[in-house]
Length: 66
Image 1 (tube, rainbow, N blue to C red):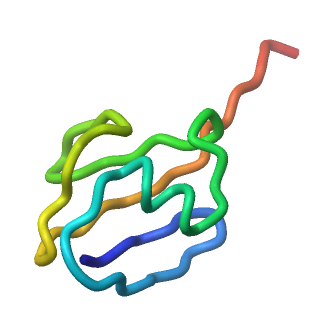
Image 2 (tube, rainbow, N blue to C red):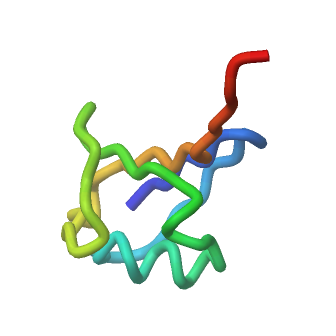
């Protein structure tokens, strides 16, 4: 599977199908700090991504009015 990281941009290849939570753990990413997108849809940590799938991991950015 392909993993597209954002901010900073990076691409990683992982073998086989994976559960999103396992991918985040393997990459040492706190699941509370990112959004994971598969096929233009926000997915949950228990989602299984096929070996030929691509996910995008985007950091959650929050801010307020100045």
